[in-house]
Length: 364
Image (cartoon, rainbow, N blue to C red; front, top):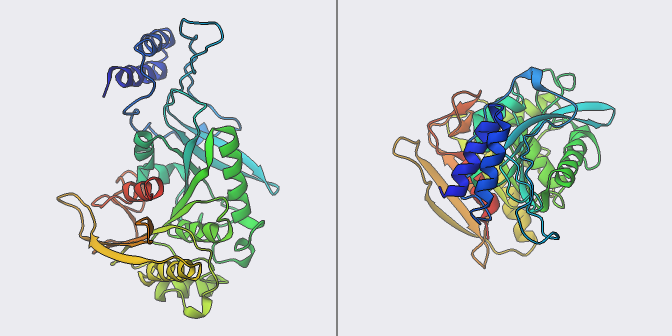
């Protein structure tokens, strides 16, 4: 970590401790070093409690005067990292969501956005803690958006991926999420060309649905322990697809979109065959669009104590990874490589958050 990064990290902690004057002085000194960007953003901030939900953003901002120099030149005002709670009004309902923003030296620079959709019996805060996606985003300089399902829409907190009312463009939950994404991109400095969506279980199925319905909004999709778009049309067919895998009869023409899939071989909640269904539909869609796909199988990168994994990448004629799958040996229905502090996580890894972020940001 260089001197500027260390100073900004310390300033962030000082601000949290209420020592604003010291933080401001430290920021001024750091900017005087002549550095333009941080090399290592601060680590994942501590999650807040339910009582922290508010109608307007509460973000940490470093308000510093411009550096000395010509009057017409103004230094950007750096912002510390934040993890804030918000409410989004749409369709007559008020949807809670959380937003992670990494530390920024120049707020004018547009950042990539990763949308994270929780599974059943989870909420935004729990999902953020369990996936540790904010830690990865801090290092990569990425906004992370966590929409939260309404309990009155689904008592288990599941996204209604199996309901035809939520399987169409410009309607239901997909329309709400797409509108929320566009709002956050516009108001928080997101890059509309680099918006990605990922989810676990029901959230993974909804991520696949969003990629199918809004390929103009999302640049890539991550499906963890989920199902393909429109794999079911009601609750009974949803349970059937979860237990046996999506049927070919349920298959439909799918939009071709870069996709990464994670699934454990010991998943007893969503059959691993659903991962194959997601991939095969995408392989067909890309080939139908004229893309040549070349599969390349390799052991998934993992630590000394991680589960064994098989990774398959489908690359186009230019060597770009268009599709990627991870099959995790013996892994249950849980986010691979997550933190034990969150629900439905498998800390043993390998890290799905790391792999998905790499796929999203470095495909080319």
